[in-house]
Amino acid sequence: MIPLEEEAEKAQAAPPQEEESADSELDRDRPMPVEEHLAELRWRLGLSVGLWALASGLAYAFYSRHFLEAIRQLAGEDFRFIYTQPTEAFFAFLNMSMVVGLFVTLPFLVCQAILFISPGLTRRERRWVLRLVPFSMLLFAGGGAFAWYVALPIMWRFFLGFQGEGVVAMWTIGHVVGFVVTMVVLCGLVFQMPLVLLFAGLIGLVRSETLRRHRRMAIFAAFVVAAVATPTPDAVTASVVAIPILVLFEASLLLMRLIGR
Image 1: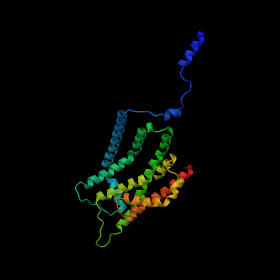
Image 2 (image 1 turned 60 degrees about the vertical axis):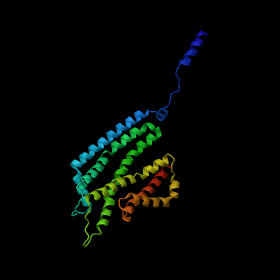
Image 3 (image 1 turned 90 degrees about the horizontal axis):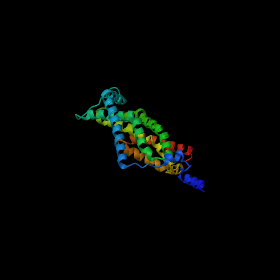
Image 4 (image 1 turned 45 degrees about the vertical axis):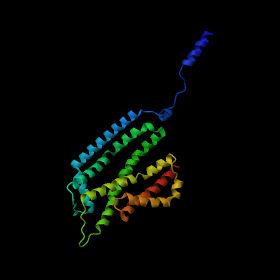
């Protein structure tokens, strides 16, 4: 009887043979104290802001006048900016340099954001985030390129077309740089629509059939968003922004249909 009792005790003391899979380990919640969570957030924010400030400072010191010259050439070789306040030119250069610094450091900023939120995501969600982030950065750059090479030249020709006898365009540097920066960033964000709708479809928030049934509402919403978001309330600027929104919306529907959602 003694050997049987010893075997029973060993069986009770032995660890369970069933091992958890890698997926369940990745999907398990990892509680973190609030203090550690806030400390990590402060550290990542500080690192990101510091690198952004460094890139913006370098852009201001070495490349700001080159970027201003490129903006001026959109309106023509003979066009000249003016400024009506002592600090207007400085803040225009600073604003432009900060946007350039944002574009340069965007991959690092996105990586920091992913590292911060990844413990709260499941394995499937992390996999989709890692797949979509590179396309998101490419679409953001594509939106900025669309604003620079397509939208802004069209707007420039339209606005300068009002010149004539007794009417001369004398744009201030602050307004022009603010307009260009707003359009570049806005188009970069608008070009994220396919990924946003695709991710919403993957997690079950929307369906392509529902979006197709409300296509008229989407067209109306595109022009409303373009009219509200653009820095000028004219129909030309709104149309130049609304048309790519509609094209991206249709591309999103096609993409959602291809993946079966």
